[in-house]
Length: 572
Image 1: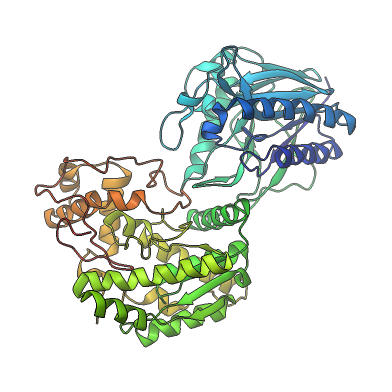
Image 2: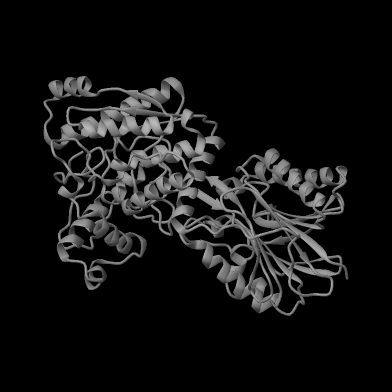
């Protein structure tokens, strides 16, 4: 038995773009053949893009995917790539007509063995049990005397099923196709799981993952190979397309990499989160046909971080930053906004809002919180006007802490088509900003974010001397409570037992519960934690259940532009 070279092709598909995705598979196969590979492993649902959601239920899409797969097999053979075994994730059809999540083997111009995903996740962002029919039975691919088992993503996360069935099959390797979204700290969990499966099967595990943004999901790549002992042999770079090559020796033993290969530098969690946010924004812009973005620049940390992310994603020249000062905007905030724009090279504009606000206040006689919200809404109108007139995508700049407690003005700073940091807690906003500036310093570049924007106390600046801490706990404490209540689903009693004081718990839970209706209307943004608002956390807007002692009315809007003031119950 001769040695067998396997390529793991980590590519970035677009949902529904069968032609471009097939071209990416073809190109990956050509690169693998040039490198001497006999097997090419591609990610889950790569031909259709992932997740396809209810597109999978359309007969027209099912037929188009099947036809494109058959055509791809013929194209590979016509291009003298028919000798390759190309393992492609795609949409299949069960005998009862229901769609399936499959791995098809293309070889010698035809579609060969097809493996169907057994375990269909139905938690968090996944809804596969409702969409797909499950598979039954294992598939073992024999190439050059080597026995290669196939599995798809969730199949290795669940005990039993195809992995258990393959335990006595004498495998030389397990090939796993994945569409595993990024979450903070998830990489170590994946590798630990692969190590367990490798030691159980007594063979190497090759794990290929999608890369790229799809709506509110980010796939980080980080494909890898472990040997039969679970030790890491090879790893792909994260957040970009890449190809790995490993070779299974003919006489058995651990897989080896080509001469000169070195494992990539492992990034820490904050650096990875920054890369995920950048990739999520870049692909949302690119895959939806935009070329530019626009956002409001307040001089604060949130808009500064979003501007830096946008510049890294699509280039500073393609970012429109609009400063919209009011009578309450401080000189240092205006200066920080201008400084940020100069550092990044944005298309910087200044549009004072005082005349517009004055006209509305004179006509409506607004004071207090309604007048504060009016300022935010004028800014939203300006950003949408720029978008309508010139075409850039509006970015909302709210973070997860603000969204949790309702610190956004509906139809004000909540306007936009994408919200890059909506799943980033405020304390991590500061951490990301510091990391980005320190990375620039280390590279001998100008830090993109003014240090004063990072260091000054956060404020919406909608009234004299306003600070977020006027009506909220300090963000370090707030984020700790939010991680318990939102991310870990702890109730009031459990939070009190954890050591939080009753007043803080009552305030935070009250604000979180009454802001659900606003979160439903907030733009999409990249999921970077295990419990993001949206697909992960789906709670009813109309509900009388309250964890706190005193109930508050649903439908109130306790908000200002970048902060929140408690509002009367029932206020619009």
